[in-house]
Amino acid sequence: MSEEDEIHLGLIGTGNIGRTHLAALFSLKKSNLTNFHLSAVCDLDSESAKKAAKDFDIPTTYEDYNELMSNDEIDVVYVCTPTSKHTDIVKAAAKAGKAIYCEEPLAHSCPQAQTLMAVAQDAKVPSAAGFLLRYDSFILYAKSLLEKHDFGKPMLAHVRTDHMYTEEYEKLNEWRGKSQITGGGTLVEHCVHDIDILTWFFGPVAEVYAKVGFFSDRGVEDLATLMMTHKDGQMSTLDSVWHSIDRPDERRIELFYEQGFIGITLESGNRFLEYHLKGEGPVRINAETADALLLEHLGVHTNNGSLETYGVLIDSVDNRYAALSYAFLGAIKSGENPSPNFMDAVAAHKIVDAAYESATKGTAIDIL
Ligand SMILES: NC(=O)c1ccc[n+]([C@@H]2O[C@H](COP(=O)([O-])OP(=O)(O)OC[C@H]3O[C@@H](n4cnc5c(N)ncnc54)[C@H](O)[C@@H]3O)[C@@H](O)[C@H]2O)c1
Image (cartoon, helix red, strand yellow):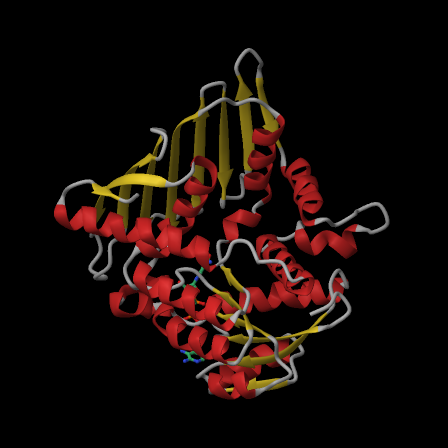
């Protein structure tokens, strides 16, 4: 596909995350930052598909994803259905020769994720995984700090993430309590994202020790705690909890290197990054500075534009979805491999599987 060719995009699953992507894509399209057509949506629930089509000005709706795959005009599909449906839909998309974006968790297990990676590779179609945090401006800022300054060797990382899971949320998202649909609880649904970030910063994991807890009667774990040793001896810990306390979700990431510290607070209204290099004072980075870096990373030049043009990438709660799609569609146009992709998903799922095994056996599990 050349830079001039316009992408025709179809999205499957117009629920919670599907609509979030559609809102971001719709704003991206309006901004004219990149050219593409929002051509079709599909959902088993035809009312949901029709509502999405109306809200986001999309001409075609389907109930059966196979019909969307038969539409030769569509060259990119977004898979936003519950996790248990990803395998069949990704396989059908690869068979139809379409580029694929699939939500995370990609699958229930690493072997399933490996199958999907092989299917996409065999069909020679680009594949992108929904690791949204890789397009968070503060996380990208932390990456840039490591390139600019000498932080020394990584020593210890800690991630704590908490998510409010109310009875109302439970009613609206009933399938989230069914492991045959989700593959599990917070370990596979949420930790998969944090594990991807921890390995992005600290490198491959050699050993994992994990415990999970079941505090609600949902049937999937609402607590996961992992201790990981990375390849060169650096260590990370990850604590993830789903609770019913009325407080904003929060993700706190702390990275200790021999010569410096980076702390990032995300999700809650109070988002910021602090870093502290040995021999210097602490520095606090606000959203404006981090957003400028994100735009630079995406190759968006702000000289000639206004906030109206590029604001979609930075100026909303869901900016990460727009940034991720902007990068994904750009990769498709330029023929590059999207990042993050199914290979990254396989790496993260391998650690998730090892963590479940560790929690069951009560022992540490070697990975490498
Ligand atoms: N990346 C993230 O931060 C993030 C956040 C939330 C959810 N997710 C993931 O996104 C996926 C979807 O989650 P959600 O919260 O949007 O779920 P949801 O239940 O709100 O929406 C899923 C939609 O898919 C539709 N669907 C089911 N089977 C289908 C089929 N065979 N063909 C067409 N449509 C079908 C359903 O009718 C529903 O409208 C899950 O894998 C979830 O784990 C990722």
